Length: 389
Ligand code: PSV
Ligand code: MN
Ligand code: MN
Image 1 (cartoon, rainbow, N blue to C red):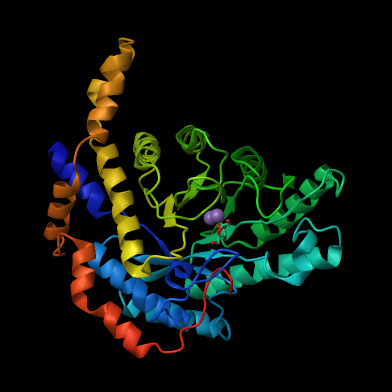
Image 2: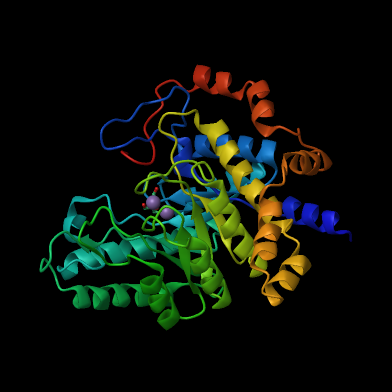
């Protein structure tokens, strides 16, 4: 296979998971600007996700968030999974939610009250039942747990409580299932977050075992953090389970992946390629919301941004880079990377799409499809989904 053919093959087989909540209305704590035509049910979210996959060819799975995507019972989840399959999709990562209940004011699995901890654990275990019904491989855990003031609760004891809950969930996993632990520097806790960084997530995952992996949400770091270093290290330790891709300019804003800093996304994807992580062992997900822009084309755009960063990363001339690095030629080594980054990969991606039987420009194809007009006409009384639900 020629080098270009190998790059194309890698791009064809890439899979980017879209989040169900990105299709629904969302906003900030100041205002949710409702959009006409948004999905009213999990089924309608899948209908929209199918359009993203139809036009990009690389978004075959959809992440669910429980309870935002709650259906009646476990049979209902199995039906939802069938519905997805009928549309050429599969249900992906199950996201747990132990942050939107009155009881969780002081935390969930780290809460000082054992009754609240039991309730939170019950939800996490319920999410594994849902995975069994949907056939999902991965459970994503993000905890809003933390404290706002020094002395508010004992930082060490909270780690013990966290560890206890994680072990209970880990033991419940089937042999083919995984637990993905996500970290976030701050928010909603403003003093000490219980899983604030990759080191904390990694330490817990290491103790749990091989089915526990770390999730890197690109928006969850301090400004200036070298995220690609974290990616390289986690891959080297076989502990990188997934990405939540999004962009932010200041704190966690959940803007479109690759919008704020496409160079950072390229650097991350280069480490993924370098570390052999472009496989199904790493789940490549979007975790973002579209508060003011049209949702489906924004999701398509985000998928394309990840594809462009991946294509550039795949184009890095590994031999030339290795030679320059071995010779200690700083400028030549940097130039190899920059050459790949500065390549316009849009024609290559257009070609890949055409070879897959798709239109070369997915956003234009979506606009021409009439789907946007159809959902506005049909989905009257669209409800809020995701944030603010
Ligand atoms: C938290 O900020 C987070 O990144 C977690 O992944 C949540 O589940 C998700 O956002 C909700 O959008
Ligand atoms: Mn996330
Ligand atoms: Mn986030």
